[in-house]
Each structure stands twice: as structure tokens, then as C-alpha cells.
Amino acid sequence: MQGENDSDELSSFIEKCRRHNLKVTPQRIAVFKELTRSKDHPSAAAMFEIIRKQFPSISFDTVNRTLLTFAEIGVVDVVEGYGGPRRFDPETESHHHLRCTRCDRIIDFQCEDYDNLAIPEKFQRKFTVLGKRVVLNIICDKCKDVAR
Amino acid sequence: MQGENDSDELSSFIEKCRRHNLKVTPQRIAVFKELTRSKDHPSAAAMFEIIRKQFPSISFDTVNRTLLTFAEIGVVDVVEGYGGPRRFDPETESHHHLRCTRCDRIIDFQCEDYDNLAIPEKFQRKFTVLGKRVVLNIICDKCKDVAR
DNA sequence: CTTTTTGCAAAGCGTTTGCATTGAA
DNA sequence: TTCAATGCAAACGCTTTGCAAAAAG
Image (cartoon, rainbow over all chains, first blue to last red):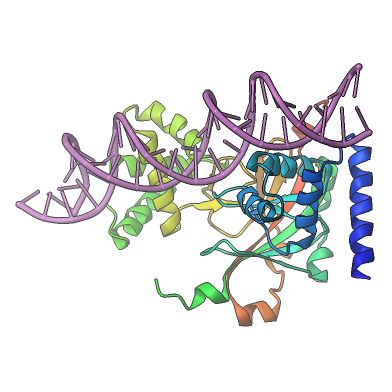
């Protein structure tokens, strides 16, 4: 059953590539599969380190470019950062973020109240509103106890 | 009256420096004054370009380091970014952001409904919650009409 | 066969660091 | 007089670019 889901996801990914005239290469499949596996918000470098274990000949460059390409077609999102390397979010459905200001960990969460937040009408008139996100800045459980 | 506010702000800035054992240098004052003037979300480079007009001998380095120091003591915030240079927010009171996904412009706005959003109790228990922000992703008025 | 993608290397930004000099307190 | 801050230059990290070789369609 999990196998079914995986291959469904893979098929619709391949379909998406076709729609965008992107060739389906082993490298792109490897990056995609790692994205579906990830529950994190990895940088390109982090993705590269994981993927190269299974695919030693892949280059950092390809991983990075693939992630940027995927961001353009909506396979990943780029998440908000505060100075470090660009980070990607495999979860493209609407959700919200806890962000530890000490260690930069980002934790996804769902919240209906936040999803249902009204967007002020004046903004809808003036702009094209693509989406919204609530970010809660926190000091996470791991960092809270560490002396400074 | 505006002058009164300015010198009030300056005095409390100087006071803040003293509390944090920071020396009050002409460079720091120049950066601070430019911050109070700014309604934008400038990068260190942008701040440098503006400040050097009034203070030609200041170095990029000092501007950058000063902004980082100010971020530590709460004179500025670092705002969420999506890959470009780190950007600073002179407005440190609670507010929310419109963010154009095309040109990266950030527009501040106030919204009581958003300010009043409850923070899920489970997060308050597990973490130290420092603050929250709603980010609305938009295509801004200037970018909307530009052909792509 | 054509066109995109890959891997590599170099270049390009932006940020950070080390250090001698300067200046605030 | 002391110690932090500044300016400069070099180092560093991350991202982007150009290009020849390889692979997808």
C-alpha cells in the first residue's frame, strides 16, 4: 500500500515533468524520491549529501539545479530563511512553521484556525494573493536547556 | 515635534547601547538614524550605499557589523528571505508582511485579527514562543502587469 | 538526430574573520 | 590609558554561469 502511494507519486511527478517539457533523468528521480522521504527542510548541500550515498556519481550542481527547477514547477517550495543557505520544503500543501531562532530548525504544523484566516479585502483587490503562512518564532525544546 | 521624537528615539538608542556596553560611535549613530528613516527592508549593501552619501568614510564592513550587532540587541530584526542577501527590518514592533514572490519587495502591514491569533497551547507548553508573523505571498501591483 | 541535462571548473556574490589602527570612555 | 570599534584585506561559503560531453526523447 505504501508501495502503491510511492509509485502513484512517482507517476504524477513524471507526468508533471512531461507537462513542463522536462526530461525524466535518473538524477531528477533520485532528487524527487529523496524529497518525498524528507520530513525536514534541507539545503541543497544537505540533499546532496544524502542522495550521493545512493547515487555516488551525482554532482552537487545537479542537485542544486534540480531543486531550483522543481521549485519553479511546484514540486518543492523555497522556505523563509534568515541568512543561511537556501532551504527547500518538500511539503507544498498549505501549512505553517515553527522556527527556532537559535538553531534554525523549522517544524511544520497544521492549524485550521490559521488556514481559515481571512485575507484583508484591500489586499485581494490590489494584489494577487498566492498564499499565506504563519511563522511562530520559538526557542525549541533542544535549545531551551542549553546554557549560553 | 518631529524633532522631539527624533531626539527621543536617539536618546533611548544611546541608552540601549549603554545598557549593552556598546560604545556610541558616529558610525552607529549614522546607521541608527538611517534605520529610523527607512520604511523599507534593506540589505546591508543597500544601507551602506545610502549611508555613505552622508558619511563617505564609513566602510561596508562597519555597516554590516553594526546591523548584526543591532539585531542582537533588538534595534533591528532580520526578516525572512528566500535566497538573496540578508535583509533587515527597522520596525521591531509586531506586524505582518506582504511579500512579492517576483520582485522580493516586502510591505509591512498591521492587522489586529492577525495580532490576536491564538498560539496553540501545546506549543506554549513545549517551546518558548517569542512571537508570530503572518506572511502573505503575493504578486505585487508593479509586477502584476509586467509580461513574462 | 536534436535538444536538454549533466558534471566540472571558474566566477560571482554576500558574509565572515584577522589584524593593525583609531577613537570612545 | 584602556579596550572596543573601525577599516581593510583576505578567506570563506553558497550560488550561478559557461561549456564540452553525455543522455533522453
